[in-house]
Image (cartoon, rainbow, N blue to C red; front, side, top):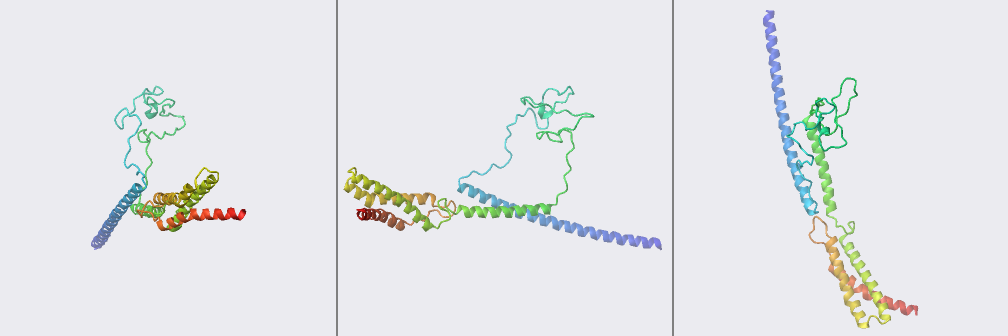
Length: 278
């Protein structure tokens, strides 16, 4: 009777173990399915980020970094994995690896090391596996943790990309100013330069170098037109954001009023100042 009870208990234990294994298999399948979905989502997201960065790079005329393995400039004397040919080191018959390769002056061969010798660190160029040293065992990595880290880095990349787009939508000239204030400042700057040129021409007219008609034509038409055209060109070149608007707001009416009124008003003010001082 005890044998039957033991058999029944064993059957129940095996049944419970089988159900637990089936539940574990189902849970592992669900976990793998979720990981696959997360990988697909991150892959699409990273692909979209790459396309957006390429678009920003083309917009600001910056070449994207090269993708994939780059050709090595180091000389190769044989197929991968083959020892580098060279003279034996220390008479041991060992070729010395990369350090004993010809054309590497000033670099000695690394000996195998014997009893009583201090351990020597392998150079960076020599892999531990090729040198006969067992590599460090890599700990088990949790895919969910790695995917979470990738998601966080993707969020960080999105944040920096948004900041880059915001900065790219601001022009290089007076980026913190409003478009109208920027246009007024540019036109006033060119008008000020025209006023200085007009004052020089007035002084030259006083000594007979510049005639009255020439001074009048430049003061009323030439200098204001040059100021308007200069401000227009500067706003179109440096007042346009790199991303977003295709043309910069130039406010030609404001520019016309500022440029064509600044020089004559400055000349009138100059005349009033001279008569007042006299």
